[in-house]
Image 1: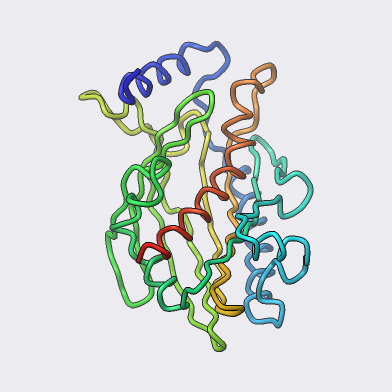
Image 2: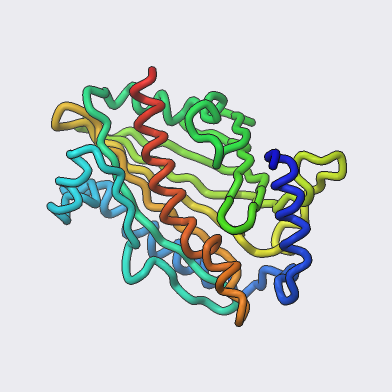
Length: 264
């Protein structure tokens, strides 16, 4: 089956399953996510300016696995899912080590959004810088989420990088628009109205920490996203997208980050 046929059959399958209809992102769901983000960003800001700059510094077992070449990805707490009214917040954190790299090389690779599809595909279908102002970027990305069904999303992100002393950087990325794509790759391709779609991804914030030490650079990311709640009786279809993919996507992204730096 060609990729285009798979996209189209998946879209038709999704719309044909009773109970998996479009849903509206509710104001109280957005408010719950905003409250969670406010608390998380206060915590992450304290971490960025503390001695324990990296998440793995609080867990020797994770640090050992990362030093041995593994891309570690774990729930920030609990199972990584937080129920909110009419939605789910997903909070995952992960790390990878890039040997023989410099912090300058890693940051240059991270900011080279126009070239990201060479390393981050197939999950990243397109990527380009829309606007750049110093260390602040507005970036467009087309994301593909594939597990049981395929979901394609057109997304915009506002990203700011902050250099710190002692070979440390951190960055903050906020999604500013996420639109699910109907009939991707077809002449009839259209974007659904953001917040009125199947609800597989409504928000996506990413918080990156970079530190050069131990003969390379440690890269960490905490990804916090918002999706719909799971319809009763359809966990078999929806759970793989809204619950399983956050962990897999984070680990894949960290591995791709390492490969993109090593290839430079």
